[in-house]
Image (cartoon, rainbow, N blue to C red; front, top):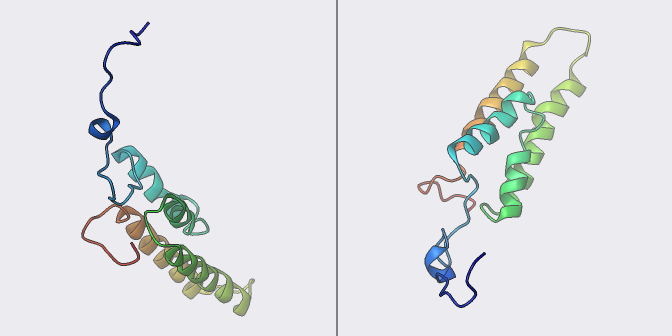
Length: 119
């Protein structure tokens, strides 16, 4: 049981973030690895999910998440609609692999202080 008359530490001293600083996307290295694996594990269908979460948290601006959503639909949806589904077209697979690599890299860079575009 705590003593109600004991002086408590100031919340301004114990807060992990400076006032006015940008919020963080990842709380730990494990969280960063798990969020980076989302576009890879979902085969780029979930490439936009980390960016939606980052936009809701205030880490990035909402237009970045919208841009990723549009690019994901264009890269995954349009080639699959244009090319014959029964035929073998390595271009569609290449685009999906490219989207997976780019979105995983950008997800890992969400908390990087050097990257300022869209923040």
